[in-house]
Amino acid sequence: MMHLAIIPKNHVGCKGARRAGGGILTIYLDNAATTRVCREAAELMADVMTGRYGNPSSTHAMGREARQLLDEARGRVAAAAGADKTEITFTSGGTESDNWAIFGACEKIRKPGHIVTSAYEHDAVLEPCRRMEERGWQVTYLAPDADGHVTPEMVAGALRPDTALVSVMLVNNEIGAVNDVAAIAAAVHRQSASAVHTDAVQALLKVPVNVKKLGVDMMSLSGHKIHGPKGVGALYVRNGFRLPPLIRGGGQENARRSGTEAMPAVCGFGEAVRVGALAMNESVERMRRLRSRIIDGVLAEVPEARVLGPGDAPHILSLSLPGYKSEILLNLLDAGGVCVSSGSACRRGRRSHVLQAMGYEPKVIDGALRVSLSRYTTEQDADGFVRALGSAARGVLKAR
Image 1 (tube, rainbow, N blue to C red):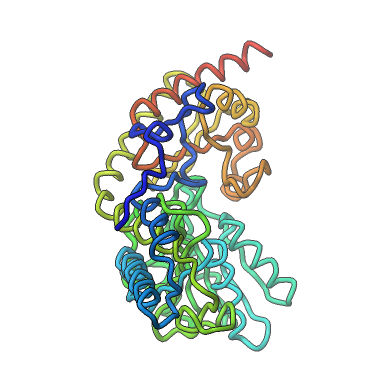
Image 2: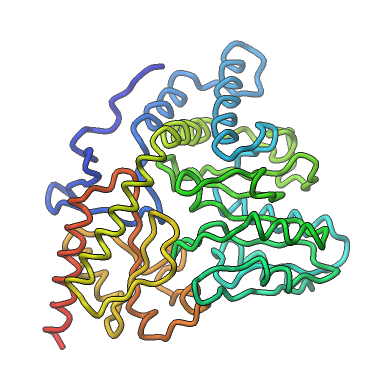
C-alpha cells in the first residue's frame, strides 16, 4: 500500500490535542459527535482515491482490485459485528441506516400498523417514526426508567397484534446507557413477529456487539464514531429478513442499495474497524479510568455538579451543573480551547429530549454537559477539562 504523509504530525499529536491556528491547545472531548480519522484509515483512503481507484463493478484488473478492497472492508465490519459478510450493506452513515431500517420494515406492511421505540432515541430514529405517524401508523414512545434504561418488560408490555417494528438503541448517545437489546429482542420474538432494529452507532468498539447474540433483525453502524471517515455507515440485515431496497439502479450492494460504492470512505471505515478492534480492550479500559478521573475531579472542583445517567458505556459522561446555563459554560470552555457539548450535535442547541424523557427537572437539563472520550484521550485532556470547567463555573458565579 502506498503511504502518504497526508496528516502533519503537528496537526493531531499522540496526545489527541491540536493547536487551533497555532494558538490555544485544544482539548477535544466531543467524540460522541465525531472522532478524528486514525492515520491508518486516512492513508488507505488516500491510496484508494489516487492509486487504486477502480470501480468495483468493473471487470478489468483495477475493477477486480477495487472489488477485493470492498470485500475486505465488508468482512472487517461484519467480523466486528459478529455478522456474515452478506448481511452488511454500506450506507452513507448511521442516519441513512436508521431511516432505511424503519421505512423499509414498514414498507413491507400493506396497511398502517404499530411501532415501538423509545423516547430517547436519536433523531434519526424519532423523525422517521414521526413520519410514519403522518402516514397513519401508531407509535409507542417508551420513556426510560429511573436508571436510564428501556427494559424488556417495557417493550413486551407495549407490543400489539399489529406491531411491525421495535427499534431500541443499544447505547444512548447522551447518557451512555446500555440497553439489554438481547433480552428485548428475545422478549419480542417470543410473542410477536415484529422486526427488531437497534441503533448501535455509539456501541461499536465501545461495548460488545454481536448480532447473533443480540438477536436483532437489523442494526445501524457509523464510520465517523470509531475514527473512520464521515459519510459512511452500514446496515446489518439478518439473512432471511427481507428488506426492500433503499435505492434502485445498477444493483450494487447485493441489489439493496444501488449506486457506485464510496470506495475511499468504505475502505477507511473498514480500516478504522480493523485498527480499533485490535486496540478495543485496552482503549475501553483506559476510557473507563479517564471517565472516573473526570468525575472525581469535577466533583472536587464543583461540588454541586451531578452525574446523570447510569454510566454504562465507557466513553460517554453526562454532567450537570444545576442553576448554570450550559451554553454559557460551553462558550467559556470553548474560549479556553475545550471542546465538549450539551448533548447530541444534531440537536443544535435545543433542550435535550433524552434528559426530558428521563424526567430531569429543567434546571438540571439546562446545565447539562456531555463529555465523550476516545482511545486518543489522555490524562492531560481529562485534567485540563476539569480545571477549565472549574474556572468556567467560578467565572459564572463571579459574574452574577
